[in-house]
Image (tube, rainbow, N blue to C red; front, side, top):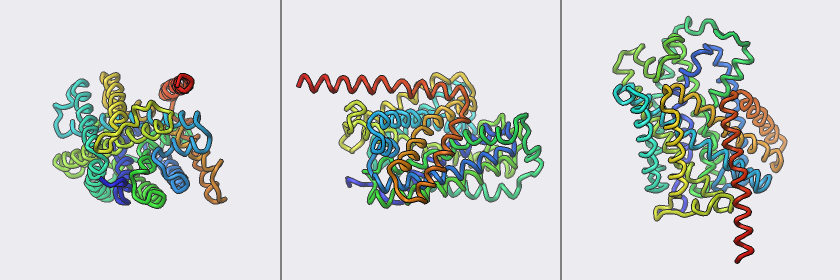
Length: 428
């Protein structure tokens, strides 16, 4: 196997495929209470995502190493900040895997209602998808890359066509009142920006397995910017179309709003077809995030900040421990919330994952401000930082508390590992 089996198309598919997953299909239901005012959140988030993509592209050119956000924080600020960012990002990844697996269950339930007829069945369906993607990744990076490229093509084209066509059938009455909530527009924009950011998480995905990407210092930046642009435009277009097709009350109660919108426009068969696209989309995103879930702990373990078990590779070059540990944690998260409805689980988990991801986004922006060069790129990084802080403040108290607890739990582990390493050195 080539030491760098992933090329430009695969790297771009990793970004697009990781970003377009569950968000484009389930998020309209979570945004339904905000009505058309949620479009302000989309506008802010898309602009912020492009600022972050440009910043991470610069960072990838400066430090083209496996680990992405973790590497940038460690190189800029040292071991402890690097560990905190790596730990936070790892949490966000396995939380994302749980959310995407739940979304897969929702899409499959539209085609085969019996699979999600009870919370226990829905949880079993989600876990089957999670461990299928884990098995594919255990076969090797090349196989995971091929899966990513295939699923990205299979979901991107139908999603673009759906968004472009369905928007012509949108009912203007569904956009009124513009703001159906009791909150002011700034508050709604803030809250929806945190939710919509979930749909655009993954813009940094190509930076994480950099050592496996051909000509990484050139390929990763291009894939990051192009992939973010493609995924952002496609997602906003499709979600806006759903908002215009379905009434708010129908949208809020739907477990597969995009498939339901297709059914309303073109009949049940169209809804089933789009539900199948949703399932493929979720599998593709899950495959990409499982890949990332093994690469991040691998990078941190090579630097001595995560346990050395994460450095062990299979004969296929796969970091087995990272994939298995991440999937096990995602499994626990799904099982601990299986008594809730799919939309409730999805909404909670995406906020938790987003909170954990925004820490690396803040650190990455600060890293370029601290160690980068060029007035224009530093201005972009400063704006990306402001956006990350703005989105972080809109996460909500419950997800912020859980995120703080999970991230804080890693700090004692960092000091425990340092103490054990010093003890080994003294006894050697």
